[in-house]
Image 1 (cartoon, rainbow, N blue to C red):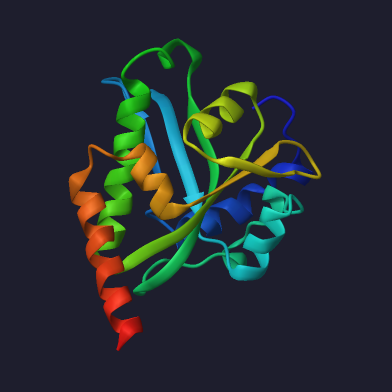
Image 2: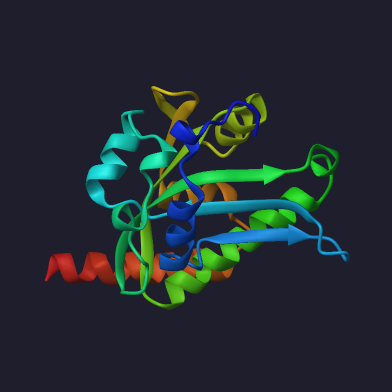
Length: 186
């Protein structure tokens, strides 16, 4: 991505550790030759880092294995979308839908394991990224100190806006919310 520096992006060794700690929070779209056409990557930031990101103060270089959750225990977490990328020639095709479906497949897998998400943040650098987050229903909450705009949304609202065809996922979250509401009443 044009304009990224080591200060804003971070060192490769740190990203290797992030991927090792959280191996199920990224996905790739490839063609028959295994060329990467697009990908998505998110992490669940620990609370101080999520708050910092929401204020626009977090640099991606600060995302390290120590600042994220492994997502291997049941519970409630947040989503910080690091990047969603699709090569320009595939942006007006069904490829974006395929990329989104793979993301929601992963969210469903987490829900089946008792891992649910409460909020979603994204730092959009490009005009396409900003349009995408707005189309997702996300609201700008801050300017990033380095570059980009920070978009935010309640995760349940994010699903209701962007995953309406995914009745499996919507049902999993509905059941979870019903159990949560029943427990809080008792």
